[in-house]
Image (tube, rainbow, N blue to C red; front, side, top):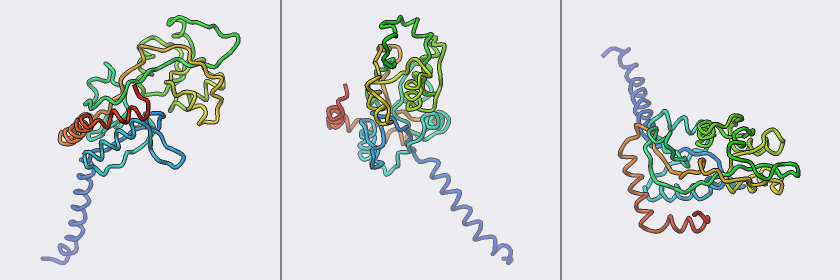
Length: 250
């Protein structure tokens, strides 16, 4: 064997190890979500909590997986789960438009969406659904509510990166309404904004959906089977019911 071949051999070995590691990492199941109260959010101690976060933590434990849940902006999380295999995303609304874009896992909860506005003496006490479609709404991009609003004909949508920006725009008078759950006042307070001036105007039935965890297309079936087996086990033990009671989930 030549000296050149002997010198090259260790490098070839290292390269092979790197490629094996990359292939292994690519085949692992990755968990992604967003920071969104009350479903999953960080406490002051930087601990991930919330009903959906606790369900997923129990699910990981039941499946015996030591996997980090990556919390990133929703548009990025959604894009990863939409385009790359071996991703699990939560909490994601299940809708007709999304039905064939993911492999759907288990249901987490029902999400009810309302139109919220700032209180004011000169504001009309009632508006028709058609009137609402012409109002200015702030909404997080890449969300089910954003797509539903477009499909329903809402004509003045301001797309933002997260729901916190929507609240700030509402209180600054830059929009007339936001789409939000019952947690809007609590979220406003967490941002140092006034929650007493917020008014729940009307429930939007077309926007309410069930929240699920879902797998990206092309995900290894072994991952899907492992997670779904763990989810079925959690259902049978009553742990999910206990968590719903703890977080007062319907």
